[in-house]
Length: 495
Image 1 (cartoon, helix red, strand yellow):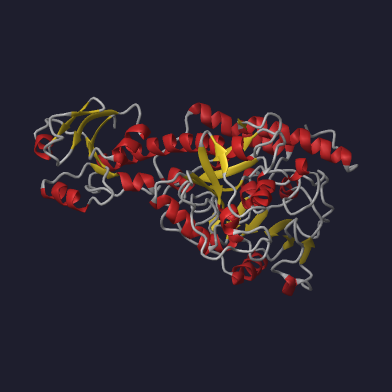
Image 2 (spheres, one colour):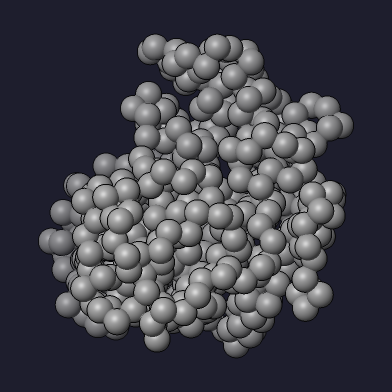
């Protein structure tokens, strides 16, 4: 699809024109007779009747917010090659007419895929401009990490951070007072130009209200979640900020990648007809190999020692526990009873295997206390690098943990009892089904979308957005520094 026509030339059409820079906009349809026969940004404005006379009419992008009457006219004239701008703005697969036409289905998916890529590129620039450059410095020369910024934001009721004459607000600064109490009836400040939401608070009703208010007013909004290659220590640990400062985020303007209850940008890309180029495939393979070789992961404080598991049977099965009440559990369509069912299933399906339960590195109290006396189950409570542990396993059972995806990187068979970002694409043994996820994807494709396309990395050294390769190198340097400071053995065979 190279040609388009717009229906409407209002403010939303202006936004669409900026987004679709590079497309050939042949015409703009407007029902206002005063506009017909003029030009808009050099594009001829025509009537709907004139559009019907075109010999090869292009695809229509319907820009008005309430398109019902327009769609009725299109239906009356048997025109089905149209796309709603609403669907693009709301980050969902396009609703169009003529879905029985296979060629049109492929064409509209190609268009949506291209728009997703453009939006994602601009979204990264937006987050860089309004978040990293502004928040990391926070008006001073000292670098401030994400978690530290949230603490600073709570110190005043409505701090306004200005960047390039724009007023930037974080939801934490609006919802919490200086004593970490929720501000009842908090409203989006009138002077807000940009809203940043960290999904740590996104379950809150008041924050959802702020998000909807921002979207209704057309205020740019970014929702961010901690990245998959994040830091040295977990955020919960109190130590040198250099070691628990976040290095990456997964950003979205429509949802959160861990929330399977609604589509995210990550899911929509994987569900579209996007495909990897040869260079992207080579890059994904090289990155996966680098991750496996260096054992870099989300938290990187643990030494690279192989755990002394012992060998009681010929098969080892890992069951991954998670923090109770972790938001990825409810977002990932997991009920509390799913954890018990998962462990019981692992025991039943692997009668001759040793079952190892890996508890979360932040908290040892998990979901499996009722199984503590089972002689076949071995609990792993000490901190350890997940990739080192996964190398010693034959199968992995998980609900929504990132370890499940890392197990795939290690070439393991992974059984999933929830709906994390990597489930539903044909690379896992899924115990639940999400009807929205219809495409079959390779491991490299899911990796590239999650770790490269949808992730934003910031350099510890120059405080600028960087590529994932640089982020990994800096994490490796910082990990070695952390090990030296804490007298942790440095393995000679790991870069």
